[in-house]
Every structure is written in structure tokens, then in C-alpha cells.
Amino acid sequence: MGDGPHSRAASTYLRCRVYIQEHVTDLHTLDDIARRCHVDRAYLCRLFQRFDGRSPYQFLVRLKMNRAAERLAQDDRLIKEVAAELGYADPYHFSRVFKRVIGVSPKEFVGLSRRGTKLPARDEAS
Picture (cartoon, rainbow, N blue to C red):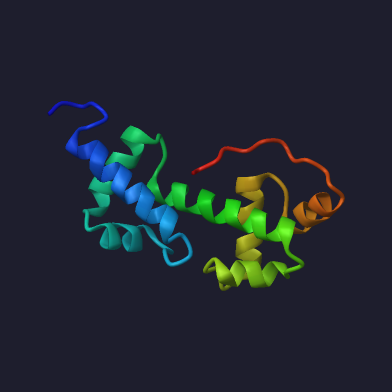
């Protein structure tokens, strides 16, 4: 038993983390995550705080914004298309979240990536 990497809590955390990574575009809220991972919402938050240092929702948002950054850097896609693909109905809300997580607005990011400018390394969720 115990608190090691093979504990039941660690196993549950890893299972939930992998589920979030594999279903990032289908998940939108903390309740979605908890329901789909078959764990209590409060327990899920405690697991992520213990093993990751952030909430499962913060982890999900980081994954979404990293995916958005990849799409915006590689494709000639509209910001609102990428926002909708990741579950953001309001492109303005998406832009605010993107800037908070990535450090620049999606529009600035597209301009920088098309010029080949490297952005400072950001925390990777995966």
C-alpha cells in the first residue's frame, strides 16, 4: 500500500490523466472529467493536486491550448475554427484563455509562428 508510485491513488490519477489526454476535445468541465473517469469530483481534484500540483481542469485547459497552438502554427485555419474544434463557442473567451496560458494572443501567435519566431518554452501538460 502506501503513497508510492504504485498506490491505488497514483493508479487512479494516471488513469484519469491518460483519459483526459485521449479525450481532450470531448471534455469541457470538471464535472465532465469526473463523470467520465468514474470518480468523485472532489477526489479527482485532490489526486491532481497531490500528483500534479494543479487541478484536473487546469490540466485540461493546458492540453487544449497546446493543441490549439499546434493547429494554429501548422494550419491555415481561422482562430474561430480552432476555438470551436476545442469546444469554445465564444472565440473571444478562447482568445483570453489562450493568451493567459500561452502568453500571447492567438493572433500574435499565428503571426510569430508564420515568421518562424520561437516562443519561450511553456509548461507542457503531456
